[in-house]
Amino acid sequence: MRNTEPSSGGLALVSNTPKTEATSHLCANCHSCEFVMPSETSCTGLRCGYQYFLVLPFLRKVTRMDHFPEVNAIHACEHWCEKKLTGTK
Image (tube, rainbow, N blue to C red):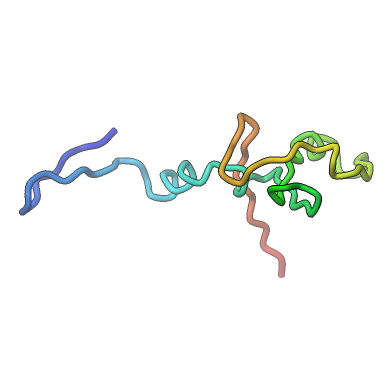
């Protein structure tokens, strides 16, 4: 995964992973997740909305925030999904 390249001061490690791919792997946490929801009632200020977002938008019901688990910004789970940037004009 890493190659070494000679440099004037010795060997330098060089990653073959594209910069954008490496950056997204480093940021795989709840704070950067598609399903995170801000919450004033959570000690961490965040809750996991994975179950909420599984339901089609027109079928979603308003639910109290305490029904969703509190999450820490630096943690992640198997449901992590990168936030999609939507361009609005």
